[in-house]
Image (cartoon, rainbow, N blue to C red; front, side, top):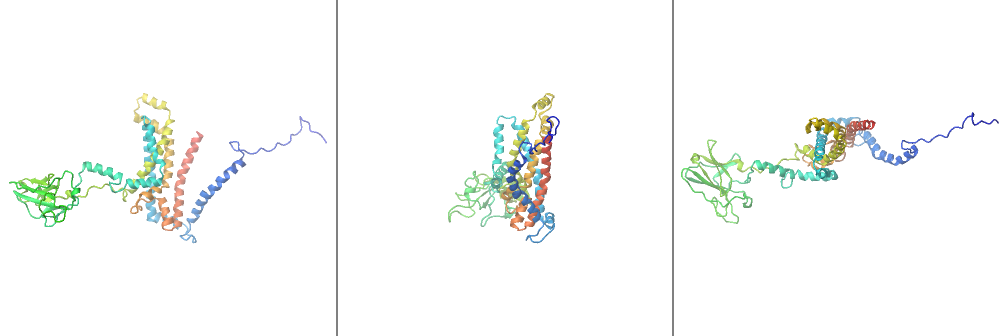
Length: 447
């Protein structure tokens, strides 16, 4: 045997090195640790997606192959088309408004001492579940101003500028000299100067009369004038009071408007005093006295927030209330990393605060704004809870969205094939937005 010299002979082959991940961990070990998560991911995500895709090509029973009929229903079914239209409204307006509000809050709170407290209050709705928020806003949008905060505020503002009627239920009683006319009431015969006219009404409980109402006073005639009294011709207690006669316990219709009408034209008008008395000039001679409809219109009850025309904007408002804080926190974090030297330099060069905001702050925050907007877009494409809870049954069709229609088709209407097609369609809508987000994140990493 020949020996191999240490200097010139061949070296024995080196043992193969185990492959490691970028963190230094063996890939086999990393795969073993990831295996449980991958199994769960496959069972809870991959399998349902695959099953939904397959199921979307079968009929209601699941035995017959339906082809693309279920997908045709996405564009022919009226409910699905309404849901698709509402989803477009959601995607356009909800993320945009929430992001803009978050930007405004983040910028303005930098300049106030109590900015942290304000951010805490604005972000607090994020701690509330969608279900709880839906119940809260179902009450906020209640039609009754005594229950719904939105209508309470709206009615308060409206009544500040437009006085509501205090006598919506008032009407003539038995043997009254008044008859209905154009939503109000008018005397059956003309009146003359020097004559005292009685205009009795009923229908308003004494405890619902205006606070300024006083005991009615019987009318007294005056020369060259038409005088009268309009009052609540009702006294509590069986057999108490005289019909069409002012009794001591009866109240005058304070603030009631009285018009003198000739040939369809108003020639004079007056407003009843607290005791219900009124006086008209000589021009009222030969005219009929009219209590116009404005005296009896129903009090303003606000907007029908959950009606067919406003239900979608109202629900979007509740969503923005929840998610504006999320946008504000992310944007505030991005704003903290913006170089202050650039802003100061711009101010030194004479730029106004608006110019600094528009030309420096917003461009530097563009990546953060994109993250917020894209995240909210993905979120609103799947919106379900708020619409299901807030929209009443009478207007739920008008507020319908794709996730809600998926639920209704799959459970209420027992059409799992169409429901699966809607779910696949939703997935296809989300994928481009997710792809854009992933691509943008990779571009940020390269920088």
